[in-house]
Length: 334
Image (cartoon, rainbow, N blue to C red):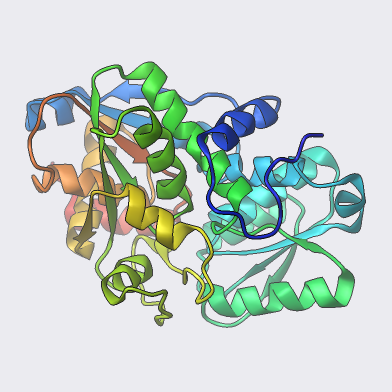
């Protein structure tokens, strides 16, 4: 297997890495649809496409990066087993890929991870370790397992293979939406935005990349404002999959987000909830609060008008039924 991305620090992830990721993961990951939302197109006066990462086996985009990283491992590393830490979706992605490849996986999660995601992890057969009240605390346990058992860590975002895997979404957008001029990307640790941003900007620097996050515990946003990676306590939010730190020793995504993101928007909880209800009402589509941040940016007219199409990354649909009921009861547009 050709592992051109080294495990040590390199200058940057390259567009070639993204093309290689596309080839590497092709046996496990299929292209996802970009479907026009006529309701949102009418509201914005521009074509709006929904990039449906919800159609993956795990219901979220994270499986792209996880597959790219795990498939790059040596046979000895696969035999020893793997571990990760996650707010839910990345853990499910690692567990899913590991199950398909016959690799033992241990997923470290905090007690804040929603029940729907914990149940999915159990169904996928991963060993689960509950640790503390944040992704950072789960990460500490993950790295302890490396020392104790010799497992290989599958980082959730700050890893060149993970970034390149998520970047394959950008290649698909370029293929399917020739008039693309805006892409809205939920922003957490930055692996998704870094990969998509590189794929898009390497082909057309005029495409505008907007990061969206919740108002509370938006660690990447606050880190960019401070000019260095920060650590913040996690707070309750509908966009729970956007929680977690970016790592005080962040090697890749902090700089890549700075380079490829044109603007960032913080979305209030009420607008996230309304956008989730709006999509269920108008599209019969269940999506997580993280995906709702992108829809909220459109519904709130937060994207400056320009010619061309808009793509919104619908990152996942792994959400508790109790949350769906609350959102529909309290925020339904009907």
